[in-house]
Image 1: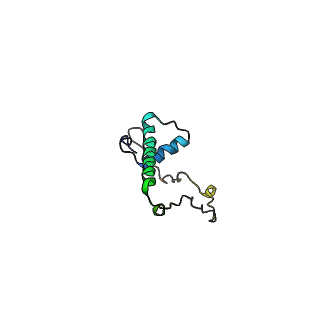
Image 2 (image 1 turned 45 degrees about the vertical axis):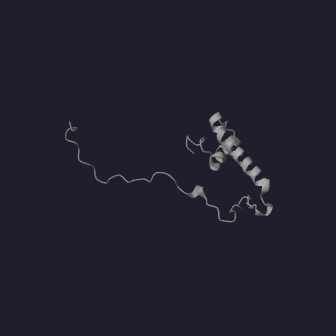
Image 3 (image 1 turned 90 degrees about the horizontal axis):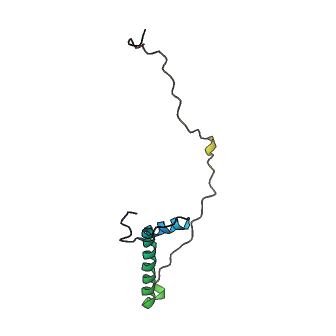
Length: 102
């Protein structure tokens, strides 16, 4: 979504803003333009389709949610060690800096 999205409304932008509003975010006046314009576009499309469209030509869309894969084995993330890898110190001492030796 860009700052120019209100000029040419897209369904994904409207869905995104609707979801934010569903989660409790209060849309600004400009942000609200996008879902309102999408709703108006959908209402017009539905009204145009009802005027003379053949009911048998309407596409059926599956809106059911896919099943979650709960049959697979669980990954025990507690057993995975995250963090920095320990690096061994060099075995020999570096030469002393002659400027620092008293």
